[in-house]
Amino acid sequence: MRVLVLLGAPGAGKGTQAHILARHLGLPRVATGDLFRAAVREGTPLGTAAQAYMERGELVPDEITVGMLLERLAADDAARGAILDGFPRTRSQAAALDRALAERGAAVEAALYVDVPADELLARLSGRWLCEAAGHTYHETAYPPRVPGICDVDGSRLVQRDDDRPEVVRARLEKQLGALAEVVEHYRAAGILQAVDGRRPIAAVTNDLLDSIEPVPYWRTHP
Ligand code: ADP
Ligand code: ADP
Picture 1 (tube, protein in one colour):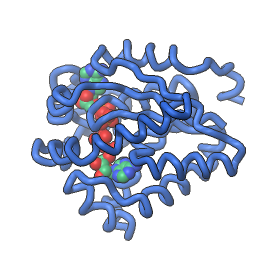
Picture 2 (cartoon, protein in one colour; picture 1 turned 90 degrees about the horizontal axis):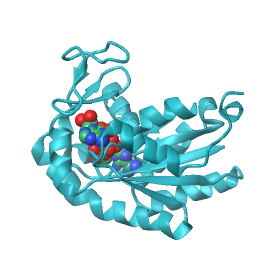
Picture 3 (cartoon, rainbow, N blue to C red; picture 1 turned 60 degrees about the vertical axis):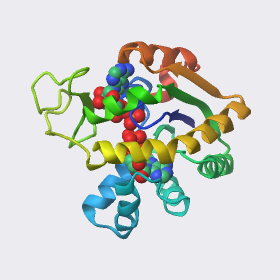
Picture 4 (cartoon, rainbow, N blue to C red; picture 1 turned 180 degrees about the vertical axis):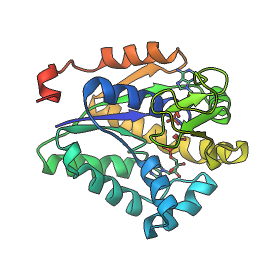
């Protein structure tokens, strides 16, 4: 089982890179933010519980988040592993993931930290557009779609997230960066942290990330 974790501040480019790595490595992208947004849309009890935290830019409590993520990881398509995008975001989530993987005789292979300075994050998030179908990411000025308002990959409509309004973005940065630093430390201490400079163009960041992980033969991800 091959589990890679993508770490970064809100807007650092985790989602963008997770989509690309998932395709390259033949692994599913598992994004807790997407799981929460789907639950909110469907009006499930989990969605109702998460929504207020998300609107305030706060982390959803670990009791809710960890169970949801582990349930997703138990699905058939994640049997060979996954690219985790947006999880873990607290030290206790990182510990819960370590324990759950250890029970399956597995471990996180690498924690890939996309490092972007705080002053750039606001500009990235306020210009972010996502496709409705799969959350493919675009940026108004830096990475616009070929046809305005339409996803290059799957043709679905592009939308902006409610929590990308400047006041919520500021709250997210204020409330989440401390926990991110702790998670980065968790993986540094475990000796599996790989940090890359996230200010470079998307393709350069992807190359740095791929260089920092062990190549796995194609037949292992496409049996
Ligand atoms: P971003 O792309 O800005 O990093 P995400 O889509 O990953 O944001 O997450 C959106 C929101 O969902 C977060 O601000 C938080 O409220 C909640 N969330 C997502 N993942 C987690 C997690 N692992 N722990 C707690 N809350 C989470
Ligand atoms: P995260 O998932 O970490 O919150 P996203 O992948 O959604 O971040 O990216 C946030 C915004 O920044 C999007 O509008 C995306 O198009 C843009 N972006 C992603 N990577 C880069 C990059 N290397 N340089 C400039 N903009 C980027």
